[in-house]
Image (cartoon, rainbow, N blue to C red; front, side, top):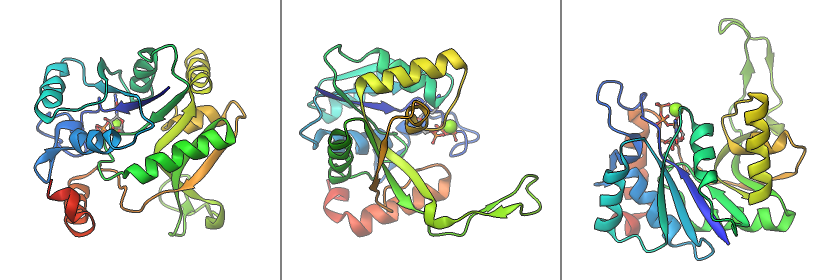
Length: 236
Ligand code: CTP
Ligand code: MG
């Protein structure tokens, strides 16, 4: 059984510094970000169910969306935690015991495609542990210790920019999170926690249009991409 965990409990402070609208409910081309993600996950046949991690106190708003849009797959809402890692952990705690594979995908990446989700899942199963979508780094990357002077230039041939979806064997991801909690370790994605176990994580070529909505300009770019590249999707 494969379950998708969707961290959607962020408050989007960089998107909406003044109005407190949970970012996953922020509209994009007339539909909330979470709705775009759910529509895509619904189209991935290997996904048996979805756990959406929501900002505490917002369950009713997400449930209303589920009913209005008629999401078909079994779907559970759980309250999130103080940061992304804690939210994913809350989602993992809600997994059915027979879950073998977990696909984590952020609500903040509404333009993900079914093909990319499937490719990451297949790669994780092929290697027997984990795989993530990532893009080769095209910019030259500088490291600075003080934000003023360059300390070094990194070899960009070796650098990849991590995205979600990320797929994991469920037991490995649970162990990785448990160990991180025990050691008080915080990471910005789930692969980082699994890498620490010394377990192989495969890179799958991501999609440049699978952008992460962080700032208001990202919403403008996402709208333009939807209209330009995904005309058939945007029309729905
Ligand atoms: N997230 C979460 N729980 C949190 C914080 C973040 O589930 N406590 C989720 C977000 O909903 C998002 C993903 O993790 O899908 C990536 O987080 P980010 O882009 O930082 O979103 P926000 O935390 O909402 O934005 P900001 O940091 O600007 O407040
Ligand atoms: Mg955040």
